[in-house]
Picture: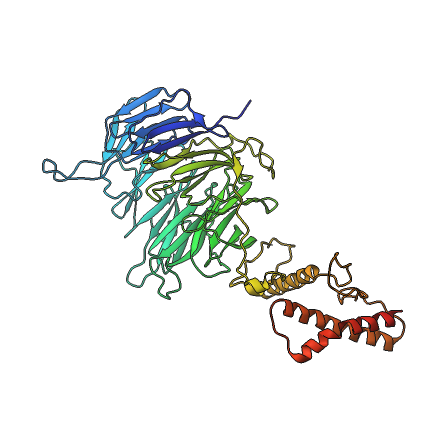
Length: 582
């Protein structure tokens, strides 16, 4: 049975459309493009339903044949979301007050998808965490209400089944999957007390003794909490608005690890600077962190928070695992030039290195074979459009917004886990491609007088660190050892690029033919006479010094009188060396 073809939803100033996914990306045959300006759109979690608001009403249709399921007269809706089993559609519109209604209308509404009946209307003034969180089986749902977490069971929102009351609870994250549900809660520190994150398992809530794990820390104005797919551990990125040391414009970040078995740790990072991105592998056994002052490092850690593989340094600030977890994209978007590094995670081998300049959006297709990059407004109001890529670097489809048009959003249709099996990784681009956009090699500036000489590492303001396998049994090099290794490699390359004095002169060459000297890099053949070997070694040393002087002279350096005399003796020394060998 052939795998399904994912849809790509496109929203912009020209309306809303559904495209049948890669590689053709043609218009969905049953879905007619809505030319009205769309405020928002969303897919259901299994991808069977699609909903959007066009400023007049909300429509819910089936993605298979675009048949209408229900419509809602809610023209001001700004956000939409389906519950995991498609029973409820959640809508949010900005909170407002009127003279007739001084307390304002309930702006968070929960609707029955099939019947269109209003289940519950709630107040949600802030847009942060506007949508309730559900467990995968919809048995538990939770939302934050003024320093409390309210838990509901079986979609009964008329009665609160349980509460978690903690002073100044400002954020929470419900675990993915079904029962038993777990929740991570964050309480910011005050009056010198540290901030903390605690893990609880529903319905046992409240008090430090009931917590599965507890991690306290300072320097946290806000946090980002990410569960792995198995709901066995959570990563907490703690951030401050201002770095008091003045080292970073982005504030200061630390990364903490909490496991449901009670283990906690601070993830030790090998380079100072901001933490740009943290991504769990779909396998739930490792995670990738992009961090450090530019050029940033990227490192994969295991569940013991030990580094497994270091990708070295480069212009990157984000990491994206494929849905199957077999590929990892390290990218530099935003204020960077859009370089993408595609890595085979099992072999830790780079597959491709395409470039998507000015991209403001990146997402993996559920098939794990394709990605989409887009330049969207209002982040960038020029050159709006999107590209669909194969992970090998080939551009399969490209669309650009016309003059006066804007692109606002692109979104892949989701699919249940296991819909697309993992395929063998291909290192060659497919045949049906529009072209590839590989990142051009970057080199440090070199003055004209030095461009004919082999490059050396000393000419760079900073040295990019190479990838390094840190798994057990692999050789781990220290920073100084890596530096010495690069010096040796540069010296070796320099010797290989030197012209061989013994090579035959080209036709018309003005150089005087002479016996070929033996370079010092060649193996020394003993003559059996120690005195003779010593003389040969001294002659080779003098000839090597003359070669270096000639290179300096060619680079534009003015030689002194004694140095010029040395150069003039080259033929004499070559003759002596030849006679000694004979």
